[in-house]
Image (cartoon, rainbow, N blue to C red; front, side):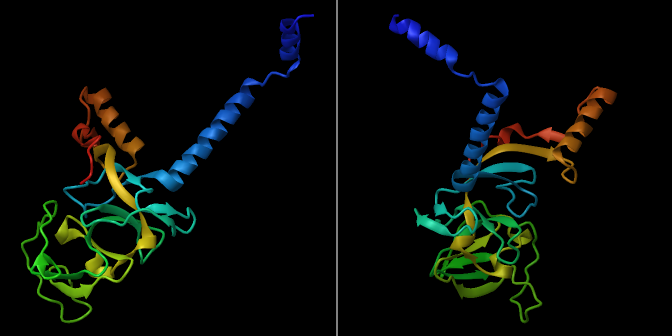
Length: 244
């Protein structure tokens, strides 16, 4: 009997995997890969508020590089293997120090050891004015330096020195951002990662979910033969935009 005949018999004697089992194994592997990517490499986030306008708009969906600052424990977020430190100007997602159930996104302004002060809306780092091209002011009102804890530090703040392994962050929409001026510093272990690209963006009825808003746009097309962009409209120009 030839080797070819033996090989054919051996192959025929093996039990064939069912289609369901093959699909199940493929889905399991895909799920594991997705969890690994989300835990260590990249994670998707959406923008629910206007504190980072005009850099980020409500309805932007972005990807965050979780690997850039180090490999972290996926359960505690503490850094296992540090790889780099945040730079001034990085747009970062972090666990909100006052409520760990929430994630915030802001721009890094002060690094460890920096002396940070805001004087009449202008940010000073170590005695020098920090120019941030992305920052905007939409409220002409100038709030004086606070005289008590109940008064706002929005336009006049500090000076404070950023502690070790911590960062001072601010929103680009300076007059409408709840940031380090109000609640303090962001520890390194609270950082999720660095935002790097917008992969989806839409405008419309953001008080509704995407399917509801999309249905509102489609309903206008069916009834009035014109897409209802007040309910849902893709922002094509923002999709694929690199975040700086």
